[in-house]
Image (cartoon, rainbow, N blue to C red; front, side, top):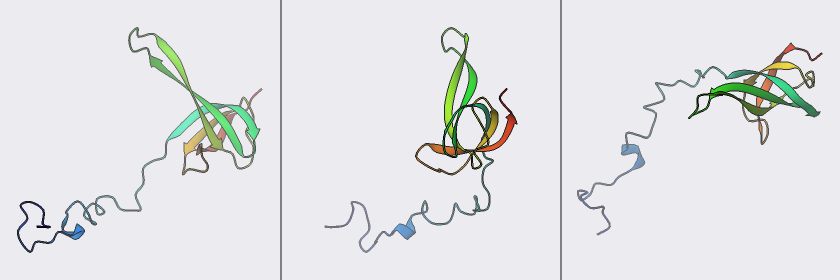
Length: 115
């Protein structure tokens, strides 16, 4: 009475019988291949933390109903190992592994210094 409905007597199911488990998909995506990292250019709006800067990235999107172009700002925290970038600098940041609760980006280069 403990068998699932429709299962033949003596047919024990194991996770190894399931084709969705196992290493069948591993051949399609080898561990050495990884996606290109996302890269963004933005302006440093805060450098008050140690080894962390807040970068504002602006993008232009059309209003869903009226079509007027609007500016949307995303603020990202980025790791700055040398504390080289200051408020007002334009920097390039790339996506990286999570470094803290909110930090997932890293400053790669300073494109333009603030005047």
